[in-house]
Image 1 (cartoon, rainbow, N blue to C red):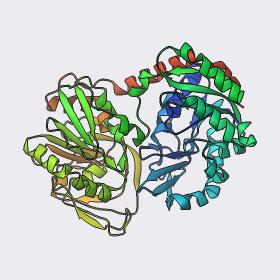
Image 2 (spheres, helix red, strand yellow; image 1 turned 180 degrees about the vertical axis):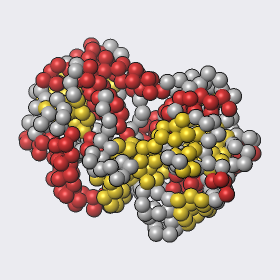
Image 3 (tube, rainbow, N blue to C red; image 1 turned 90 degrees about the horizontal axis):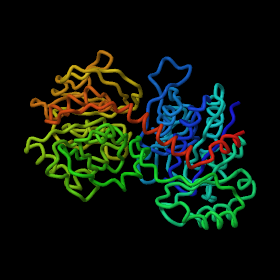
Image 4 (cartoon, rainbow, N blue to C red; image 1 turned 45 degrees about the vertical axis):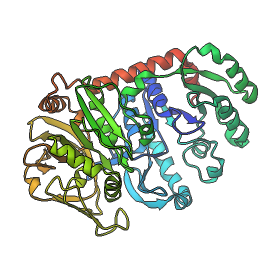
Length: 491
């Protein structure tokens, strides 16, 4: 079994995902065979990964974060890197994915009772991930300080103690109160869990780090833990795919550029990292529009992203008045793309006769494509190679969706996937729908598409940008953390 080290946070969104990715890249550069692992993740930003030994299915779902961390390791992602994925559907319930496949649905309280059964799957995947590795870097979820959930925990100390993996605690100084959060975690953890922590690091520091010397002394006084270093604000992290919708609350419009792309922030938005390749284009400004705000009138393109709850998000879309904004945008000659759930919303009707998404079994769509969608129980999950019909250029991406879409506008498909027509295009070519995630990641297509909107010089090498960002993050961690000590403490 490979040696392992685990990063847990004093709270959610302290930067664990990027730190694990950076450490994975740093370990890879040292010649180590390194793998990422996250026992339990909660995110609607999913990726399609291989299911080892299963050649009959197209693949399984894992958190997008573990997909990124696999890239940092230079290996193909596997469903065993994230054996339990929770995909929120309502404020109190989520779909449960176990080792890549749908396990069921549960409300938060019911899920707590299921965790004991899921630990076996976590430990099975854990063994498989470590089979051909020198080092596994594990990411926790939430915080070990959530001691009210400790008895059934599979994501933090529940896993660390079962698998005997030492823990580095991560504190986020940007949100304030980092001394109290680290010291408080030490105070409230039971002794068995406290013994697992071999030290801590401080993340997201801005300014002169020497100003925090007394803070480090205070933490040492309260905890006795060693500090592995203070990580500055990692600017390169902004060029990496985002893990989940928490970051959307902080996204703001940047400087005005030649093309403004408006993206409504759906309540159950999914796979919004589809927009990341557009965000790195120097002439493109991507604006995420929060509920209660109108879609900007100067947008040249509106992208309706994926959704974990198409009918629910469609109803909220109307409540926000975005349907009127979108119609006005269309009348001004603006372009519209709907991806996955966004594609379904653009049609005349969405039906859910089996109540897969909830109690509302049908609703009218936005009526901008002459199509209808019927939800069906079987989920399509697969990586795909495809070809853009309008531009006759290769595409690469993935599908994760429920539903079958038919109608006259599907006679004008947006892509050919494995010889099968996908999506739909309006008669004037300005409204496009597709089930394929990741289409903007194809540099040639993205460049030609932007050119069709009057933007020349697009199509930069997005994957190379991600690789450079990972290298920069790893270099920063090598400069500011005692990586030798962290790796040496793995067991």
